Amino acid sequence: MSNSDTPTPSLTTLPLEAYTTDRSAALTEPLDWYGPGKLHPTHLHDTLSASSSRYRIAHKLDHGPHALSWLARDTHAATWRRVDVVHAAPEVTAAYARAADAQLARRAEMGGDDDDDGAVADARGLAIDRFWLRGPNGTHLCIVWPLNGEMGGFRWAVRDRSVMDEAWFVRQCAKIRGSAEAKVGSVHEITEEEMLAILGRPRVIVVDEEMMREVGVSKEMVREGQVPRYLVVRPDKVEEDLEYWLSGEAFIKA
Image (cartoon, rainbow, N blue to C red; front, side, top):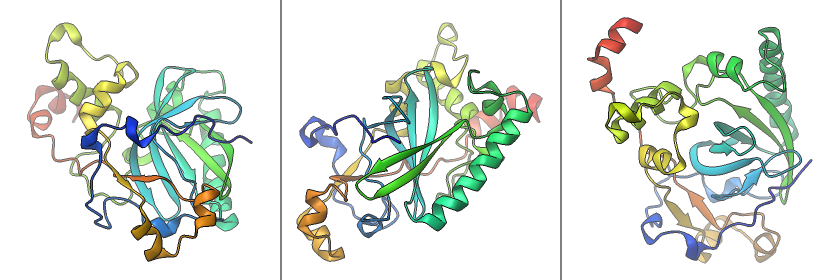
């Protein structure tokens, strides 16, 4: 087991435009989802892994009452991954663990193993790894996925009009680069700056005293680090990619 072992960046290191005061319920998870036995407080630039600093958090992908889903860079394999950090409640952990184990078994049957580059998982949207994270709110199961996700999607609470999968990221990056010479061969070739340009730079809501009073967060919980210093807003809804669907590439794949 391991802690998230990168110091949380100071709030002053975030650009001014990162801050928002819009506390609409859909933008972030509620603060009362945190506390002993609940969600793990995670911040931008944290690194998560079983034994060393491996998965570096770049952005949030989605949030739900049972897990937070993060866009992370695998610093060992130079790949982009989604890391789901699961609620610490034993019954929630058990359900996610069963699902993850089934995914990993399917991947092994298809020829994947711990030493490959994730190609089997990328192609099928299967889980790549699972590990345990010990934090201030308990012990959390973390599941590592390709950006494809099983069944072609992974945004639970957002009704995206176009699936946010690896192919979508590649298409958006190609638009940013703009020239044939800068062709994007794989989602893993996309830089972090390009990823943030695609998703929109992260926005955060600082956890202040008013928010803590509203949900009964105690000073002890703050001292113990059981609530995050800020909540990260998930990216906006993905609209229909009309340019792609009218292209010859989409016609050929169909």
